Length: 97
Image 1: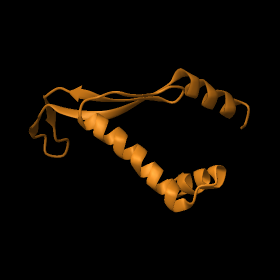
Image 2 (image 1 turned 135 degrees about the horizontal axis):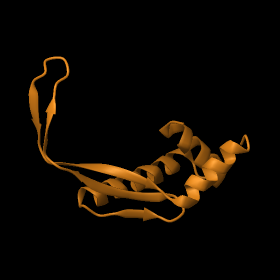
Image 3 (image 1 turned 90 degrees about the horizontal axis):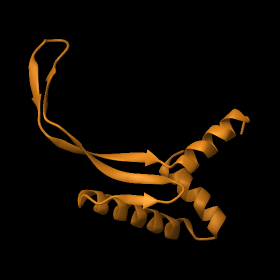
Image 4 (image 1 turned 180 degrees about the vertical axis):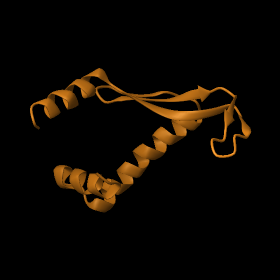
């Protein structure tokens, strides 16, 4: 499912125009992105949590040249699925949707 598929689906379910739905969608994504950039956690009950995880600095090896590369400390956005969503998806797939 793509961004435009989500916008079309939400638009048809809510009665909002596609332009209005896209504005709301962009607002939600922007708010989540800003919170993560500020190191904040975003919890959406029943769906999951967006968090920023730290990846420690380490040495890695280029497999084709065997050269050692130093990877600096970095932060990555991470999504943790809620138990409710995980169970719901699992049950739906096991029952054949």
